[in-house]
Image 1 (cartoon, helix red, strand yellow):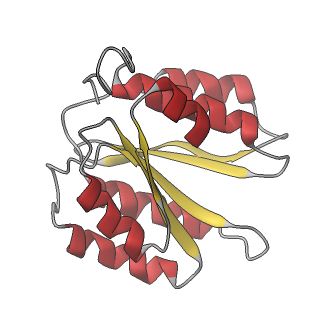
Image 2 (cartoon, helix red, strand yellow):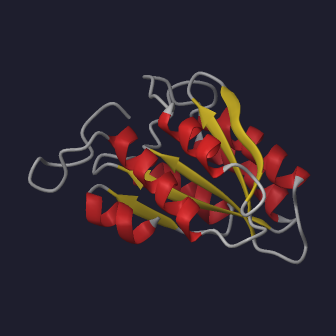
Image 3 (cartoon, rainbow, N blue to C red):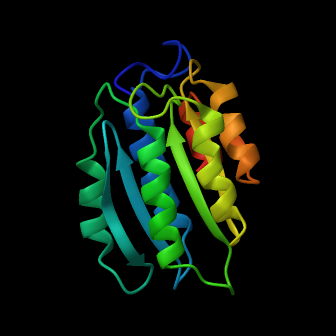
Length: 170
């Protein structure tokens, strides 16, 4: 995530910068009452934001947390998905769309690196109505890996490699 997202003619930003820009843009799209949780994952997974409620929670504090995000060389997709589904299940609402949105370069190198094994936890949770969509960051993201996960989670995947991609997708 510390690499450039694309060629210099398309984007001079690092992948992590596109992620932060995208998260900031996503906040602007939330409607009052929408819930946002953010799980970060590298060698393990940790919750950055839990139960942020648009219109009730402190948006300035949320933006500061997003600004604090940094990248490492580890990508533990398995830990990230397990934690994300744990939190999504905790705040599940039958009256709303419930979705886990994974933003990653999908270059799993820690924990399970087998997308079929990781996808099993997505299938179990998907039965409860929590869909998985993925945003692949950078031209070099592992599209096949992310596609296997999003197919299991009944969601879609999108590529973000340029500023324009980030603006339209997020």
